[in-house]
Length: 113
Image (cartoon, rainbow, N blue to C red; front, side, top):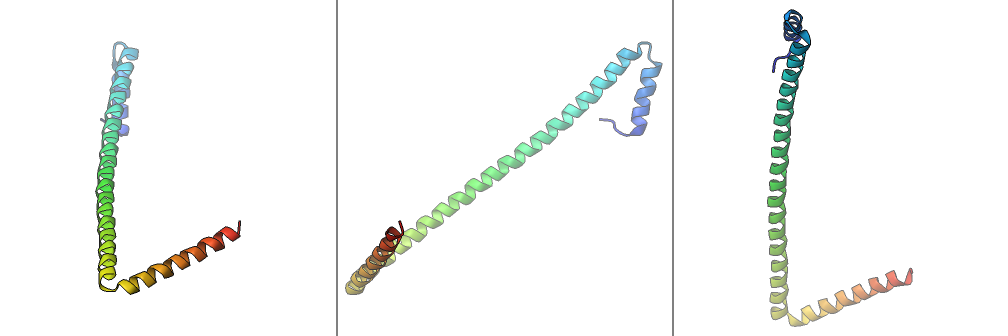
């Protein structure tokens, strides 16, 4: 693609000296349109490649987040099981306390309606 004032003057001179200036001008316009279309195609391809890379990265990050959440849930479950085996009375008291707290919160939310 040729750009700049010198090139435009050259194109103008080519069209002025041609035997059929209209045909020559049409050829120049077609050439410039082809160059512009090529540049648009390159830009579009770059944008699509960037978007695909972003999607791939997002998939990887979300997969890692799911794995980490699964690991945390598994760790909490294992800790609760260990606690229940080693201190069953404390586990029952904590469950009862959590149930009481949940019930109180539930009831206070229901009374506002």
